[in-house]
Image (cartoon, rainbow, N blue to C red; front, side, top):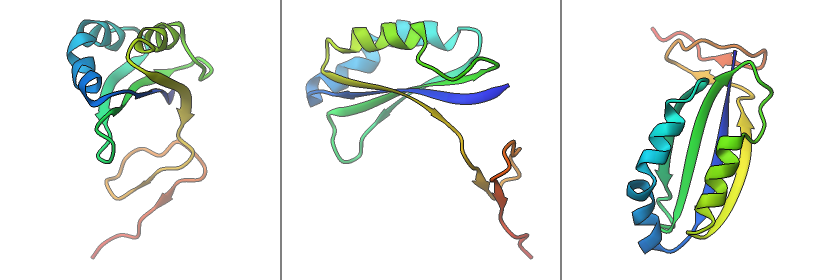
Length: 113
């Protein structure tokens, strides 16, 4: 299994950005319940209140690519403003919390005494 991220960034007005989570709540819950989806997160920019990012966290055997769910959501989000739809994978993990590392580039922090 591989964790990867389908990210949809929306550039809109502050008024529309404030409405998106409530107006899309049912759709986002439907996506969160799909096989292979670990969760869906809606994040807001701390610099530009009108920018939102919806992140679909996948954990699948499939090749990371834009999914039908993501494409449908991106099409719907176009009603609110400009949408950037991209796919991201983890390249390296740096953690002090003992999380599982599944790539060869991961570095662990030195043990604390």
